Image (cartoon, rainbow, N blue to C red; front, side):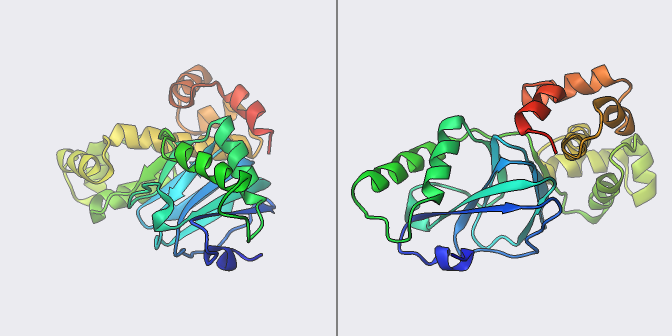
Length: 256
């Protein structure tokens, strides 16, 4: 059944499962319901006007109703998506964000995606959805989002680093390029993105690394191409952000 049809089911939470080849894109669109986009396998990336997100296995991204976005399969990927009505009992918020998906929630999402359109409002199916609802409200945040600054000068810096994440210029150099002082740019990144410029650039490199590792590139190649002094420095950053080394991450993802 089409996504549009499922969104109009008389249920507060509905699921949708689809498998896509590498490079598949949904195109820019939005939904009437809040959405949780979960990649059961493979790597997903998402863009919206206010940011970018990378979603490896074990993670998902919340997309509030009405937010125009585009999801792309960076590898062969299995999408498992939930659509939540306002009365579902889960506070999604007004901005997209990446969350961790524990194994229990992953299994619950998979089960809900298999439910028929007319599943009963009492009995095992209803209890399954109720447990999932409780768990969705507790999903912990993950450092896999990249908010975009609103000011045109800071946005110019961000756009350049989206294109070339290995660029090591400092804020003074960027300021000369976009017509702002280093202090002004630092303030704009903190104000608009909720993080320092250095933190933002490191996050950009992490997201770029995830995509390149998922495509099968070697850890050493990715580390040096992204501007790290050594592969060990990259591994330290990666482990600090995701809790595992790149090689273990690749093993859990299942490869490109």
